Image (cartoon, rainbow, N blue to C red; front, side):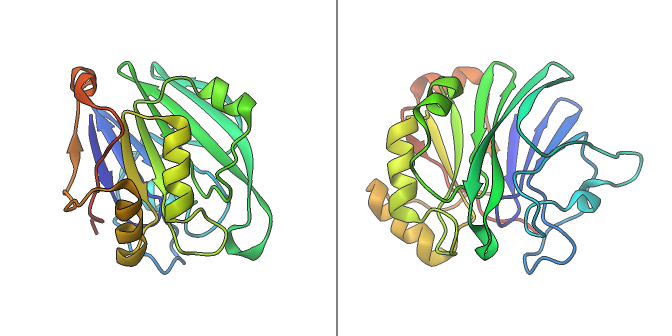
Length: 208
């Protein structure tokens, strides 16, 4: 599995001949992002920074779009969406928190989560998380560095990947975690690699 980051909360997941786009950035967003074809696209909230389906429709590929709570199975990929609230953009909206099981690994995307107080029911349903993508933003309406650290402590993933960060908010988050790291271009990982992980933070540099 290869994981690449493209600003905001936009991630590309590639394994075999399948490509997933998570929260692709829209055409009208202030964030820049590339255009590529995806097989599946997940959208946490309906906002230009999260729902750029046109950016991941390219060539012969038009993705299957998942944009809300529920259970889905596509190409042996198991996806669950859980409803939470967000105040991103200054208005209350539904934010969908996703888990994705790929190649025996469970990924968790928190989207535009506004509060670290995830319900006990959802936490129990999430199960053991291998890789958690946690927003560490200073934007109004999304959890900040301290709250992101708290969420990581609650969910206890094997790997934490910061999302929706700025240089300032990332530094604050890494200080909370007690680590000093340089971003890497991408993460290439297999299930067996997780055995050595226990709350490790990996920072992906935004690609364009």
